[in-house]
Image 1 (cartoon, rainbow, N blue to C red):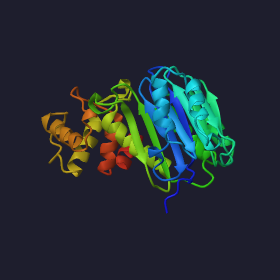
Image 2 (cartoon, rainbow, N blue to C red; image 1 turned 180 degrees about the horizontal axis):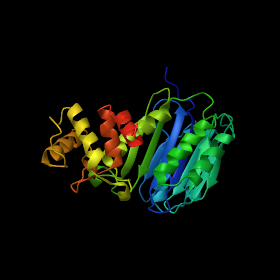
Image 3 (tube, rainbow, N blue to C red; image 1 turned 120 degrees about the horizontal axis):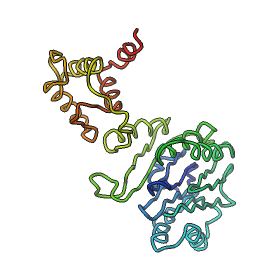
Image 4 (tube, one colour; image 1 turned 90 degrees about the horizontal axis):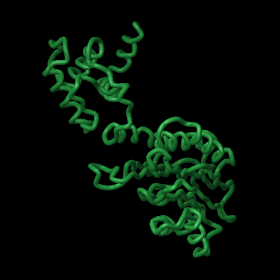
Length: 305
């Protein structure tokens, strides 16, 4: 039977990237489809996580307040002052200027609490202990990379510290950027969810890696490698194995191999990673060799086995 008193025991991070202004949330919960309840964000506006006995109105109403020019702290006060159930709520907010605030109501189930840092807030309830949010904050602050890398590091650290004391069920990551969505049509730069899974964080990472390959451009151009020598040979072997190339008669990256590789890339929706300069991203090589079950052979060749 449906109940409006079900508590999504949850740990989450809300944060802003000080370099490019991206805003995002990542979350895990012993609750199905947590991505439909907790994370809310608007590009150049702010990010909000509403949890515990979640008041989902905090999401759209909070973003509206932030969009009207209220700071994170002003927004939090307005939301709480108008909510009789405030002591059952937990919320983290970061605004477009990187100001972060949080609230953990006195009636939230133990362990419950939050840590607010520079441009981020970590919060959780029904946790194994305070170490969960402490380790999340430490990992977030000390991980190199963009906001996505830092959010994942914090989420993984929170689970490693014990996470939700009731277990795992769903997870999500949402990052917004102005015109960051597909073909610039919206602001959802990253929107990936796992609604029901025994290991939702691991599954979220797996799905995100495919999303990253398909839609994002986050790799360092210095990592591009020229298709020649042993790399050309193993790419041709993979394409033959997968049925995209008949044979390896070309001893250079010629038209037949180029055409086969392009067909494989297009089939897998990796057009975002396509190159026309004779180079290839390492992530594309890895995915191709995994697809052809040749990764172990390739690693052994590179080791000289």
